Length: 325
Image 1: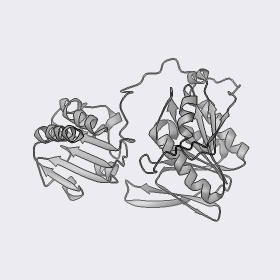
Image 2: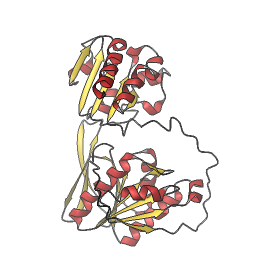
Image 3: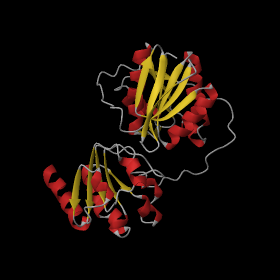
Image 4: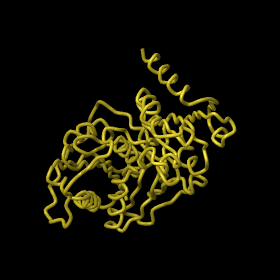
């Protein structure tokens, strides 16, 4: 294992933010192995995304901008990424810990007969061996797992952990990929996006979440969304709110939802039970708003605001708008 491959997840010319973080994570490993960073950008709109990737530390950017490939599932992507890893003669494949990232990574790992580590927050490289650091059991323990296969490994990084600062130099070499020629058994007949314009909670720098204490679905589309929009963030929810049907599961933060690590996490009307805590405990700053100052979240929140969320959240939104001028 010498080189690193970053899978740049994108759709119709719009890349996931964690895709650029994957490039930087790949760089951290490659520079310690003495190898190169290869980024793979696939599908319709890939050429435009590749130009953005040039502002990140990729030595080569392999691009396949082919709308025809959009009609298939992830099979062509797996073919390209696994094929590149074999061509390089040894590499660690890095992808974001997203739904597509997990699908691609698991199948690439099977193709390469390689180990896979998920929810990675750091890498340790010693004597050519790469180990992945990741929280387990809801963050109650931290594991360090090394790849036994000396040639290949696959790592899924947690969003918002690896910094992705741009460099205007743009030195990455763009390499055109040939479209896969084999036939694929399954095709996509319809592609339906739910809230496609909204930023996912797992990638947002700011998450404004609501729980059972908000009493109904209206707060999620009004006061919470207004605050999230003003801060450039996303709306999250506790399991209780999702189970009640107040908001879709895609917004759920917690053990059976998504794990988030934003710079700011605002919890309104959430008690902070362990199921929710394990999904947001690594947030940089946690602000809790609740009528009851003795709820569990008060024990680990950086700031506990005791009061009515329906009065406090709109006032906070007005304050953000005023600060922006």
